[in-house]
Amino acid sequence: MRATAAQLLAPHPDERRRRLIEGPSGPAGPLATCRYVVFDLETTGLRPSRGDRIVAIGAVRLAGGRVNEADSFATFCHPGRPIPPVSTAIHGITDSMVRDAVPWPAAVAAFHAYARDAVLVAHNAGFDLTCLHLAEAQAGVVFDMPALCSLRLSQWLDPEQTDHSLDALAARQGLVVTGRHDALGDAIAAAHLFAEMLRRAEAAGVRDLEDLMRRTRMREAIAAAAAQF
Image (cartoon, rainbow, N blue to C red; front, top):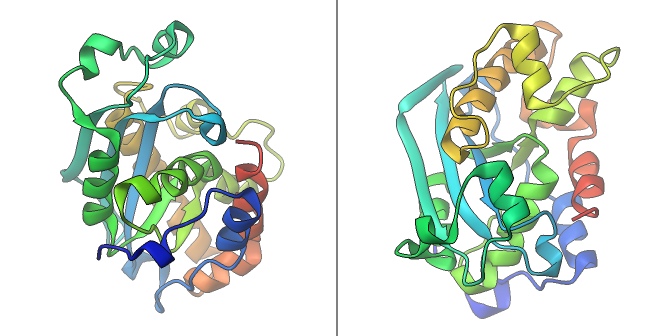
């Protein structure tokens, strides 16, 4: 649904933190029955609060505990500013690759339409959610769906591990990541890892999404991470 001007998120960090801490409750029922969209963003840099913008969005659906790679979302987007070479060195996206891409607000609005009926999931979600929240006013949408961080869930499931990066998780599960630092490739890898985490959480007795949020202190963890960006 398109948002009214009064609903759009002010870019003030206190308001962003309040939104994350007071995030919506998740749907009832076992974890595997929820619909999830696992997504990843590539950006011009790591400080969206200082003007860095999205250059690519990749996402995939997960339902019934299974990743549906056939139902995915992927787009480049024009950030309206040059992509620094230091960022291109990481994700490989150049100015020429996004020259004819849709403007970033339109890409964000299209992603919102794709994901609006699901629980959002990202690895280190504090960063990705900050990027989306700061794009709301320009895109004319509100990302008010429940959100999970697969990095935080991994920390809760395996507190003895010191490395919870996507690469480390993939290595521990024997998962080969195709297209690392490609938005869709990273989203698909994160989705498969997250599906296994959900199975482990249910085996540990987690009843539903709200129980998971409470046990992991998910909202507080995402808000604390978001404050860095």
